[in-house]
Image (cartoon, rainbow, N blue to C red; front, side, top):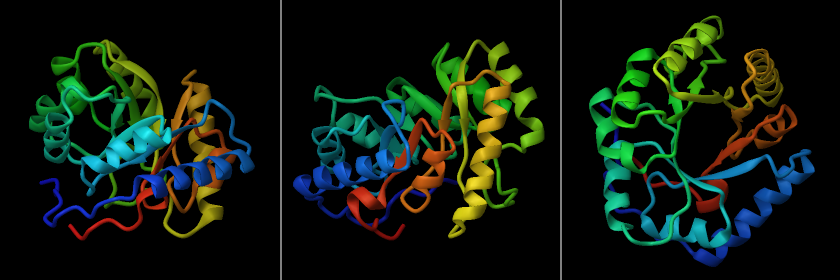
Length: 227
């Protein structure tokens, strides 16, 4: 079962978040990124003030990992100005329905069953296929050898498959670059334009390999509370 934060979310300083967003954008630019590289502010574990700060600071999208947490936040923010909300974590099929109305892009579709439920709750939704580029049994994502068939199956469900997503190796930038390069090659072979890869520690190799979405949390908001 997916975890949800069990401690009170720490407050965030909106001015500091805006400064951090500017720093991250500088990192993206130095790594060769351009206007196609968009910043997803990962607000899991933080309150709605983090979302408001990310919006005010100019983030391109909000990223959330847990359905129940996102459901609460969407209800709390109803009627307020919003930017696109991306679901970036693993999700159980029975939780898709509670957030489908508020999600503009699903990053972590790694099996047909999840795609089928998304198509049922949000016909024609935009999705990315998550690929387990590290072959770590503890991570979500399909194998590189299964990407083509999964993309085809999701398209048959009339989902809008925009690209691929991956989580890089921990603390190994050389290995990250190799993994991201392989992901980019596979995306090009399928004619997919979007690549969601790169987080606070491996942003640079991801951008160098063509990331169009980087998912940044700690570099914007600091450490999250324990779950």
